[in-house]
View 1 (cartoon, helix red, strand yellow):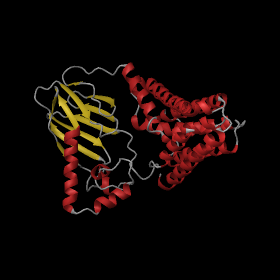
View 2: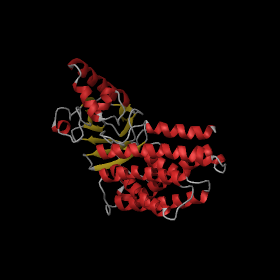
View 3: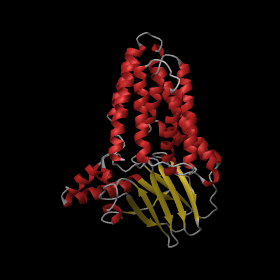
View 4: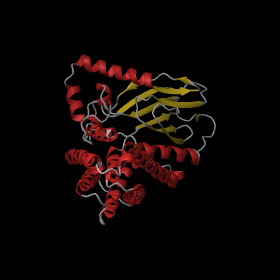
Amino acid sequence: MRPARHLLTSLIWLATLPALSSAHPLAFTETTVVLRPDGTFQADLMVDLDALAMGAPQDTDDASLVATLTSLERDEFENRLNRMRRLFERRVRLRFDGTPAPFEVEFPDYGTPAATESTIPTVLGLTARLTGTVPLGATELEFFASRAFSEVDLTIQDEIRNITRRNLLEPGARSDLFSLTRPVADPSPLSIGTRYLQFGFVHIIPRGLDHILFVLGLFLLGAQLRPLVWQVTAFTLAHAVTLSLAVLEMVSLPARLVEPLIALSIVYVAAENMLTDRLTVWRPALVFGFGLLHGLGFAGVLRELGLPDQELWLGLLTFNLGIELGQLTVICSALIAVGWCRHHPWYRARVTVPGSCAIAAIGLYWTIARVVNV
């Protein structure tokens, strides 16, 4: 019985995590480094600065952050700005020939329409700007951001040679060396495929909580693996189709419609689990339809990340593969936790029904939150 309790505890824990709300949805730390002809550099990092100033998670509700920041005394507000500057100085490095270059830190959105007239409320905006001088005779550049930041979507623009390169970095990883003197080689297909595979997997584990709950809902139906295989196959085919079509700009639906429907699909699957212990004839078709919705959700992240122009299909394929590996990991973890008792008479009453009830409650909460806030 302990694994069954662990599964239910994990689902209840998920319910305490923030739903999609009025927070800046920055899945990546979008970073642009510009090397200028006058020998200077500028690095813009897109970060929820209000959350950073308050030491809060990046998905914290922005209205509450604004209220807290605007209530601070002037001295305390300036102290927080100074602490943020020191944080960037300690946690970000632009290394030229292995040596970190000093830089100034400013927040150019603060007090401008980019912050004051933003759709989502903010005080400081989203841009941290680092500026400095490229050392004379430097031949290589390396960028680093600590694990205090999410995955980095890095773009380096060399205005002197009119060269632009992108790099996707895991938290705490260093970028590839960017040569300032020699021709810059395009990334290899292997490196592109590996990176997009990783980002597809990460979008499921740990970031895809709604997709995890949907797959767990499919897992909990009945004691036989065949119904699970049918459902997961339908779900996989469907989201692969809409993910591809959406990224290729052949299909598009607004997030304010897609995200609540994804949450509602979780409610439906969990509710049906409580009403029947058999795979109904219409369930695979419904799961296929829900998969189409989830594919549009995946596409939103991939559009934000972007695909490499030179290897578009490779990036799309490996991102899809990463998603599938994430889903398989979820299923394997569930099998390890409660698979041994799936054929016991009490499995449905003690695992399927309580687990599905918790999933339905979380899905309903997310549905309401997304309708109100998206």
